[in-house]
Length: 371
Image (tube, rainbow, N blue to C red):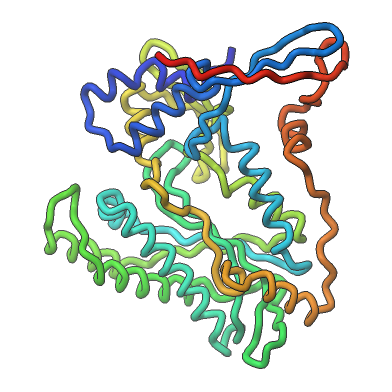
């Protein structure tokens, strides 16, 4: 049987919690991951009407940090985004926080993550509106990630941007196919906007009020060259859908990367991008593994996927239709899946049919097991 993230929390969470402070949200997510698809969450029995074969399926925890629960939610989210895509080019950019600010972000997650969203979005909107670059109002989707391949703390925002937008005359202006906005311009504007955001809000360091230390960290970050990474443009809208599906509901680590959970050690695969993207193996104590994983539990209710510009939720549908009329674009011809079809796609099985005889299955709800 393959090792999973759940095994780590089932075996080691109580010991970790006894020796380390945890937040309410960390406790909630860890407990949910440990209980996911077990009798403690209830479930249902599928019984074949023809041969009588029955199988038990337990409910998922639906926690957004649980790798077991993201497949269906990801597909449902992607299906809902199909109507937002235009039949044009798209770009992918990454806004990264410099190393010297990571301690500040860890100590003030909600405030700093919101500042990161605002600064990156304002940078793109301002630079794109400048006639020297594009001269229009663009639309894009931003996704917050906080983890690196080794579960290190690495807050950054992925952005998928439509390669064009609405100009001041209400028309659609297309950007160059292989070029959007100079990354050096974006980097310096982003640095200015995020440092200003951080100066405007009260911040602490590890729960302690230390204005001088905060000011020193912000000043140190200003002296560095910041990184805005622009990846190659997508080939077509279908590739955008594939990208969104891969990144929007990504957890800190997937079950597929975990090799073993034995003798108090967790062994997992990671990709070293500094070494030609070679896949390597790392072993951590269960305590260290949990500590790293908990750094990526988001604050309660925090929205890690946000839409800006003409993709902002208020009036989005009208703006999309207006752009399609301007550019004489037909809605994208894509296959939309039902909930059952999504489940079949993920599992590779027809969940309505008996795996033995092919007969129809009848479901009976199981009660939640109270411990």
